[in-house]
Length: 82
Image (cartoon, rainbow, N blue to C red):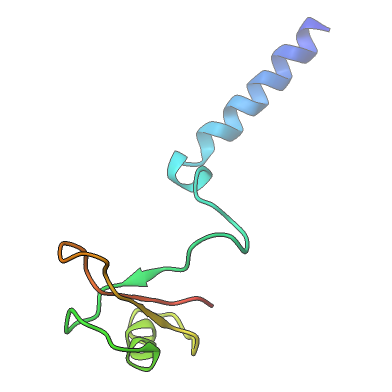
């Protein structure tokens, strides 16, 4: 029994060490946030202008949208859901 537990814990340890923590902690599935990029003009008005920003960054989508900052310190962002 002790050998089985040692072997199992060793396998779990090896699997955890194979992948970086950033990959393990990243949310997956439908609740994860879409990638967002700052537009080259540092401003966006609507999703139509963001479609080109998404395509430039390698994401083909027609559902892009603009995130307008709530305060002056934040940046305008184009978000690109698949």
